[in-house]
Length: 420
Image 1: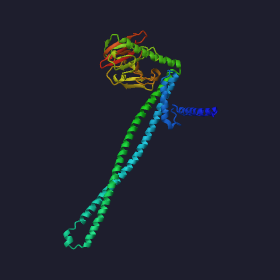
Image 2: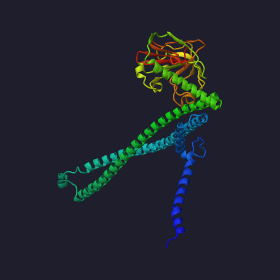
Image 3: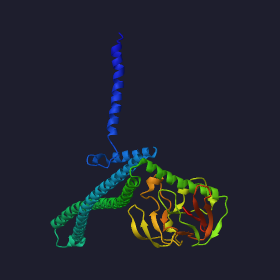
Image 4: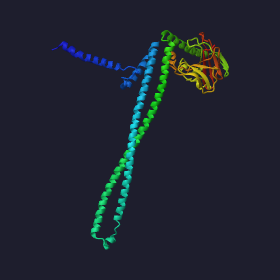
């Protein structure tokens, strides 16, 4: 007979159970959070690393606000700290494995030495027995027939030789067994030595990763400190900084497109091409100096060239002692440069370095700074670093932006922005 209540119970119970299991498991999974506090999370380190990676990825797609940027930077710091902890753990684990292998290898050395001694002893005994058998067989048939030897002695000698033959076979078997053991121990020794070498190579790689993560952590913490210092935890100020950086980028990109149809002027290395002017942004007066691997404007296509084919300017500039004051930790006179080009400013101070700096996340959304920011005293002239064909933007877009693009032999381009 049909019973609605029982049918409803049978139908809904698995569904409710499934929902409970699903949300129950989701609750357990959601407990794994991105945090560098490992006091109670040592057993699921990899899960926390994955949680941090997922969080960073999800934050990338959200609107860029100060709170989001602080959360993003904190997540990066947590992830790096976790990776450092993971590397330390891996190094410790592999070091213990190496120590255990070292102990096993020492034991194998002792065993192999003993086996070598046993083989030498057995070979010596076997040699003596062969010599004894040879002597026992020296009895001539003539002596047996005409000599004084009796039949009893001949029988005794024959029995002796038979026993010796049995013993020799036994000794040969023992020697073969010892040599087989020796071969196995030698193979095991070689295997463990290979394992030890492989582990040592892994430890070296892990130490290199640890060093890289440690350096990365210093930069990330400097980024966070600089973010809090520059923005003063003010959302409006942060948005202004972002707008300033975007305006600078747009000026350079648009100027490159505009100058494609312009005429160039040949300039010599050391020739004055402008005066350091105000950027018009919060960052104050400075020269934005970049180097790219482009031979002409025809290679600069679209809007992606700015973050492509860039080169660290220090590789092209002559070695020089400059004052470094980037606010990221480096401060004072530093010898830098490894090329042949002149410096664009005679007595430069570096206010922002090349690559990932403590300003990278603030201004460029985590992208590298593909240039050097340099400044001198007010009215400092800016020089061409090398001979080349120069394209001048003198407020060419009507937005106050001034700069120069110079193409040099060898397929290089130097960029100078914020001039007057």
